[in-house]
Length: 80
Image (cartoon, rainbow, N blue to C red):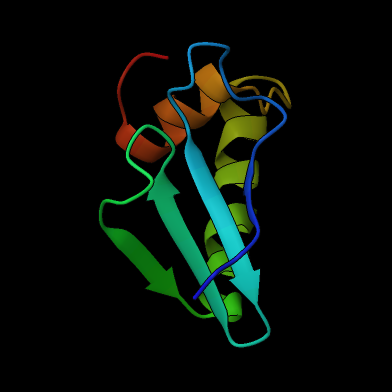
């Protein structure tokens, strides 16, 4: 069980964000507005690949902007 969840420093003040908890062999992701809801579990390698990809895509699209709206564009393909 993940004990220390954290939110991105870029998270919105309304609380709509994801939280990440990590252990040596697991990274867990959950909706910050539903802490008792479903959790997505990935390996640390998968998490690193995902975050590297998001940083790469957002830096190309937004001139190195890695703010929450630009991350939404990269992850969902929608307008941020």
